[in-house]
Image (cartoon, rainbow, N blue to C red; front, side, top):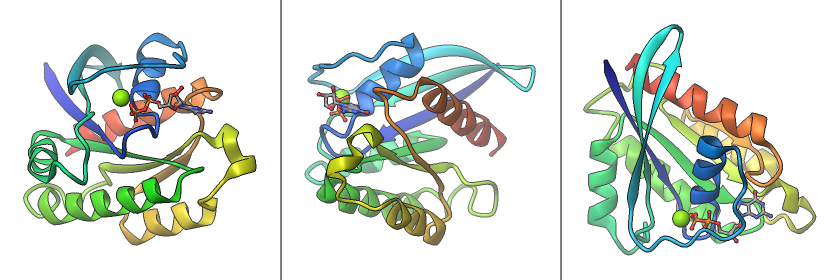
Length: 174
Ligand code: GDP
Ligand code: MG
């Protein structure tokens, strides 16, 4: 059986854990405190293939812990890089992470295959206090050849489900 490893990366507070818990349990949990990185496992069936998904919920600070970010990038087959549309600094962090993944991961792996980096603007329900325009996210995704989603862990269960299903499929093709 195939093991597919997906790392969920981004600044603290952008909703990484909320997205993962939503995907795995259908529930939106308002406060999700976890003080250490953790890996969730789920068996999935994609295109009639059985897969073992490992989802890495990171909580080390991406900017401060560059070496652990490197380890996470080397570990993973696919990447969900999350920012919060109401927090511009989280978008800049996401941009730096995407560039690092392209530098470290793609040369060794799957530069020419379907994109395994998904850029996700979370908290779309907070669009009244938006600091990052949808077009900016789209532009970055286009430049870095990522798939782009803007969604809300709080309100869009179907989109969250679709996004994770697609990253698992993409990562399993590499
Ligand atoms: P993490 O540090 O990236 O894992 O972020 P968390 O999943 O712990 O979420 C940080 C905060 O953002 C929590 O208070 C969540 O309730 C909130 N949050 C997460 N996703 C959303 C969302 O889609 N909309 C809104 N309004 N809040 C969210
Ligand atoms: Mg978390």
